[in-house]
Image 1 (tube, rainbow, N blue to C red):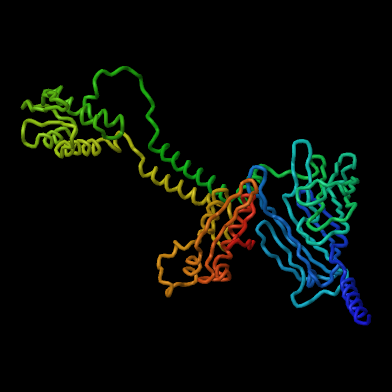
Image 2 (spheres, rainbow, N blue to C red):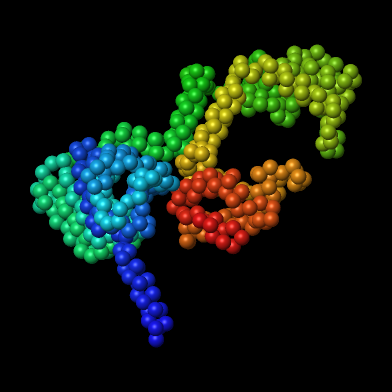
Length: 512
């Protein structure tokens, strides 16, 4: 009996110690949102937390999304500036950390543990480009609390203030509660002159939040101009901006070249010509018309010489026999050199379907002469400008794909995001050329340890998974992350740009 009592006493003491540790939670989350006339938002968040030393030890984290894609798939990056952070009325240290889609404020001191109990945090910040401008009205759509909290929120509220005292009758307010994308109705909302007030009616579980919507008449806030929107688009979508600038530059260069040397002369009176120009042979007319040499130029030259009596042409089966007559004629450009090569000092030559060096040499003599006499004189091919334009187009494409440097690179287009994932997930044994493990460095060792690697895309589930089979006797998992952690981070950012999650599956275990 005494032994049982001791066991019960121990259990009661354990339960008492658990009860002594209260629940960590957000007791109250209140946001004051002031909209200025230029559309900027100044927000003050007052967050009262209950700290018990479990997860809230030195402070709290507050995440703000600043990067997303709009309905057209274009990147949008909104400005964000912290004005002040306070705890219990006094300034509190904080640090900003870059996230894949925004900014994290890490509040607190590493060398100071919080006392248990309630602490009141105030975060004041400024942002912009958060308003929607529509045909009949303008609107603020604002996620007050965010959905990343791992604590429950007992109460959440928000007050939105417009830059003008707009009558409440001209305003419309609604809100949503629940996890991301949900349209829960656990709230009250009321419009007042110059704004609106919102409050939750029940506790929000972890990862649930409050989103408010306020519609107001046009003209209360100045809408951004077309030029401002264009500037934002170019800054947010570097690849698209590079592509646009490259296309305009290539077009301007080609237009300049065409305007300088490519304009056709003004046409004079039109009348039919029954004979070629007196200074041009039939081969020359063909060459100038096509701006290049072909077999028909050669045929035209032979027929022209035949018409002038210099040679006779006899059909011989599938080929032809050419015979010089000895008659003196006026040669067109390149025709004498062509004939000398073709006949080779004799008076008879044959043309067959098979390759004949003398025929090829004759064609080259005629082609070179026509090229020298007429090219860049009666026409221009603009090859150099076209080559330069081609290089400009390739540079444009390369710039549009985007920077995929692991340290600070970000995807700027869909092709760029795909390129990043393909490049940064490329780890496999076959990449190692030197198979002598004695001379392996860490890169060789990690790549050689990966026996199988593949990227799996789940289109319906919007998930991209890098699956690896790694021989940990060759390289440890820690070594893998030592050289590939930054690559996995930028791959995750690229996947998020494509509205997908990125997962790493190593030896059957999900590591991200």
